[in-house]
Image 1 (cartoon, rainbow, N blue to C red):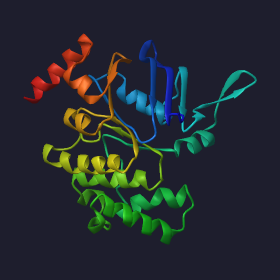
Image 2: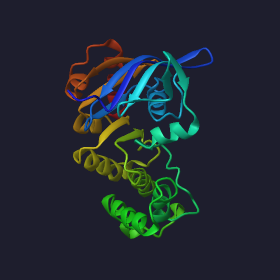
Image 3: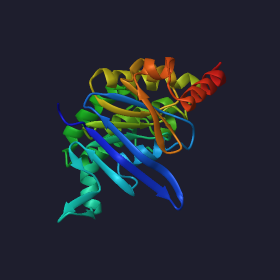
Image 4: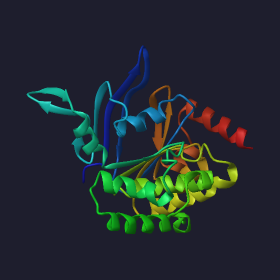
Length: 258
């Protein structure tokens, strides 16, 4: 058995006296798509931010690509890593947020090129060629010269996905990537994510799109109050959930959608 690409062991994260995460244990295999669902404030986004080291965990341990994240074990004690080491570890992951976070003064092409040139030290011709390939992959090569203000929300989010892919991550993290979009724009972003999953990309997806989780996810994780309540295949979680909290959440969501 190969090691999981992501391994979380009893991960905890608190803000003041509030435990945002408690005893979160989860493995994600290479090539797997894991969808995380749950009510607002359940810890879903916090967990993704911990995996990407935008937040430092307070308890437990997290490994990404076989490397302990955020800390170094020296003489039996854990020592926090510096920012440069955290930045190096973070390159394994790409993250797509609810808001697109594009540089407004840069074109779509420039947004995608920036990371590879500045961080990976790619040459400009090499970075531009790869950026155009990625913009084509998300269906936006014809918008390479457009600024974010000239793009729809769905187009901006697709540029954000291309920008993350330009860093050649092994793991893609999606934090409710369609929640800020109008309903008619959701489909174009989900199509890109479906294609990405079909290509074998490892994906951790926080989503409220239950149809996407059912169709694309290999496993679904239901979180509530900072804990993992239930894990299973999409069919198991959607059709025959074992926990009362899971059943209540799904009933609430499906009733709202209806």
